[in-house]
Length: 421
Image (cartoon, rainbow, N blue to C red):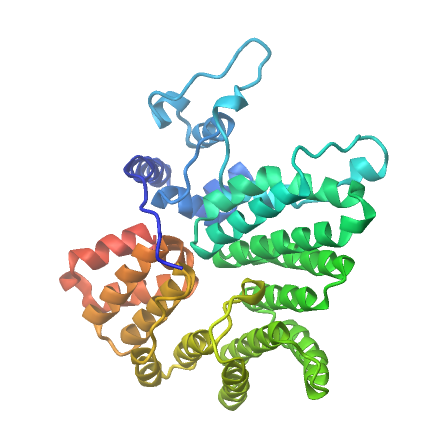
């Protein structure tokens, strides 16, 4: 997969800066303004950086009210709300942020159908839904989370209805599509640091995978859940979830019954467990998990994308770089990184490698090299740099180290990533 990272629209960037100025004039923090809107501080940060468009007139109105200005002052040229019945013209605006996806997974997804209050009528066939799921995963790998959310708004309700009314001989297929959709959503939430929502999505992915009768997809769902636990700093839960799944898969492997797709799941779980140990500063344990993942990658013999895990020798080394950075072994991370060619992997994986190399250079106070890596990562997947806590921390530290002599490219990056607030 080739890089297709999207540039921030200059109009969205200008709007975000306008919002930021208004907020600071009123001496509000991002968290305070977000709370008044019922949003997360992550969403607010994305709006101010221009990476999250605000396109719904009701959201614009709420934001304007919170800032004490009119919608026209907030965004000149925005349509005025309809006064006929007090409603706003929703047809002209469509939200495309993951905040809408959070709402979508709140509560039971199809309680109306279960109670008989709603007559399910999915608008698309199972084959059409399968095509849409593939497209959503492509957007996820490319880091286009606004597009993920826009697709999900229609896709998830249709799938939740379909699994409950589809013909018996296609139920397993329908549940598998639902599992893959929730896995993609969990991955997107993790990458935008919305770990609590990722936990919910991963749990539903595991449930749907079990209903589909595909235990390997259950393992893939556990991988997504482990990522959520790590972001939530619940390392004991992350270790338990990963270890339990690894033990089960290794038992099958010891009998020679684990297919190559299962090896991908097992390898990905070893990589996840390596990250858990690295976050806990357990150096020996982290390296042991990496060694196990390398051995599995050698057995597989190629880079694969089973269950959208992108497991293979290349991804193992990318994770080895990340693990070394987490452990503070910047030199080791840079040595490993020099031997990696990640061009065949997704923009998300390439961006993650560059981000971690930038962090490694930052640890060694190599400002020029760190900046170059971070800027290249931003080109590939802007959200990887602009929302990742560790990346923003590295950018902030670089600015502090350079002080008044910080190059303009670094200060501009810090502003885009909101790394100094």
